Image 1 (cartoon, rainbow, N blue to C red):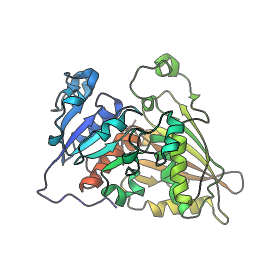
Image 2: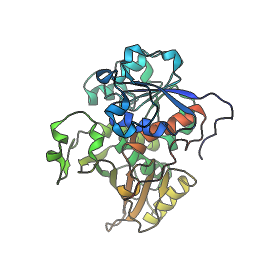
Image 3: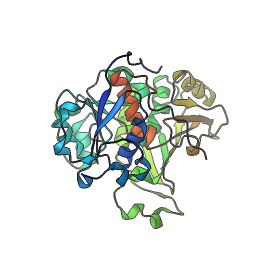
Image 4: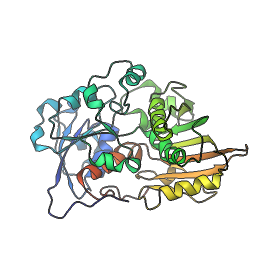
Length: 355
């Protein structure tokens, strides 16, 4: 299930990356420079306008790329697809002002929550583009291909929700687990906090330790609950606690679930293996195998393991991905492929980096 390849002879898709000086912007460039059907024509970063991307990210200095420009100078008639890598809360007005011919793939949280009141409650302000919000498609690629392919605006999921929803949604839909009493204990690398200077992400604050944050209040909670509620057909509440660990990339989610009557851990593994059979980026590991972030680093892969809990009637799911790739920019490119009719794996064929 990799989507339909773009027919031979069709035009190259002209891409703009808004917010190209952040981690997700750099990752988009890294992936798109090798994409067979995408041409990067615009890179914006208002505070760094006029500089080359290589001056901001030396690892990209060898690519033939346009210089960074201010957003208000862009000629949108020369663009087909826009990736928005702006901070949460800043994308809504930008997207609302874009010409209607553009396909927009947003990597922020601004269009992920379908309910405007829920957004306002968790993000502290009313949504500034509610007319667009109701038309946005939640872009969890493997679970929403048909809707994504028809969308003008795709809201890419957060990194933690991607790690949680890929295993949990199919299990709820198949009746393997009950939607109640789900506990998600997740760890992330520091790049998930963005590139901006923050005391909490200084090396001396993060190195040689691990800490929980956003306890009982992290903004990815309603996003996870929204996805699970859609699968269950009724409201779902979860216990979700994220942790910051001293590594650059990666998410590991350990998820504790209650089995439905008659279900087993082996049965859950079989359900997931069947659901993701033939998928290029989601793989269910064999019984006893332990997914690890080092197995997915730099790739668009998500690995899922299922284990029997020592407590009767419960199972433990371990899900891992690279927060900057499958948790952000890689999934964004995957969604662009769906929208534009490319093979779904285009630009994403890199195997994980190891060690």
